[in-house]
Picture 1: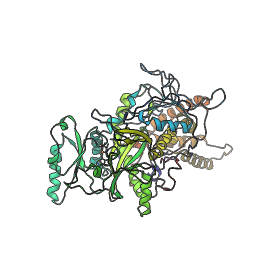
Picture 2: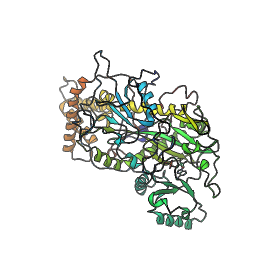
Picture 3: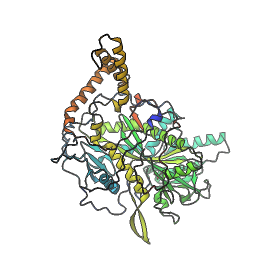
Picture 4: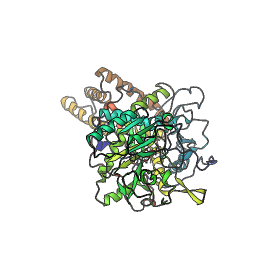
Length: 610
Ligand code: ADP
């Protein structure tokens, strides 16, 4: 992990080294709770008007250049929610002892990581497979003692958690609602219009109706040949619910629902990239591993969801053809043209890598496409970060017991004909279902496994768990956090060697090997300045001393912790506190693309995260 590095470096992929091919005993699988078909649809933003339906859609939006400096506040040297005692629970909830290390049992085997899956809802099946592959221990009904990881299907508040890690950030669902995301992105568009031009121009209804009318008229006056189309999307909606296309602001259905259910109206992208003459979008999975420092990982593979009617540019005649214009799985699955396929590169739902593979065979620079997508993801998360921090502070105030958070987000992206990625929305709860409904006879459905979903989603969950392995953190950096903040450990090693050599060559007495005191002071000051920017030197040094003392105190804990080999590793796509990190500039051309090996995709379900 690095900060302040080029985007090329930042784009290092989320790559777990070992494919967990062995299917192992599910230690906690007995008595899995029954789930009825059609239960909660996690991809829906949980707004009051949200209309749950089938799997694979979801809800959100997105802008350019010197990257935003976000909160200027400097994190305290010692992580507020670092591993270690969390204190007592507030009122109800689980008692919280020391953050559990991987202690050995009586036989000397390392204790498996424990996962509470009792609130996992529709991600349960994929989660179970992932836990089995990792040889971790699942608690499907919860546990009296604390677990290492809590997997929630809907929100941070699904359960009262006071320690461990939970797979939701407070406030994320609110932040990616259509209106909130539009607002957050617009702030950035106003500051950095070039950098944030990947999000269609949008207006919030009913508040900005007059502005919408006036701005459209202004552009039309300047360019009478402009014949725009707009898409109206109710706030908090998902799966295409309530969406319609219009050619003119006067077509907006202002009466009735709009007052009670605000909406976003945005420019419709009329020239999307087509494959087999069909419009499609991309669902990419992004792990927000930490807010401070900001750490983002992006899955190497995602899903492409296809329309089921050949695309034509919008005209008054076809505006209502939802199977032509909306890529939502939940809508298109009702079309008689929908093709369920177990192959990754055919049918109405395919892997994104299969699309890239196809584009590559036609000479498209898919590295560029991929790096543009990475930029889009980073900038979008940056736009959301300030408010997310406010939510975080309010739910888990500094110094109070609370869990650490991570979250898998679903990014819905459209590629234009010119291969420019456009953000459609962000989903706080992307569907993790790995089955689809099959209609046996009219009105009679059964759930059947979907291999394409399983290939992509199990890899996403499994690698997320690997990255969040609480014991891996301790093993990697038992006494120094510098590698995960401003400098890599390799860079610290080089610094050590350089300064030591220089000082040793200056001093007469070279009996002592290692670093002399002066060299140590120089190195220490240098590190303090790198780590704690924007402070007077004495405060930087004091902060680094605090940090070192904190991590030294963890050494005691470390003695109780047994390391484990063979865990997943990876580098974040983006890591850094905003004030310490230069903005992601235009993507470097040599970022490795996602794996695009078209052959045998399904027979080799190796992890596919980047
Ligand atoms: P929902 O949350 O209801 O799925 P989306 O914002 O994802 O809402 O929009 C639904 C679908 O409409 C998308 O999957 C995409 O196919 C299409 N769509 C949305 N916004 C645009 C746009 N600005 N231009 C072109 N197509 C769009």
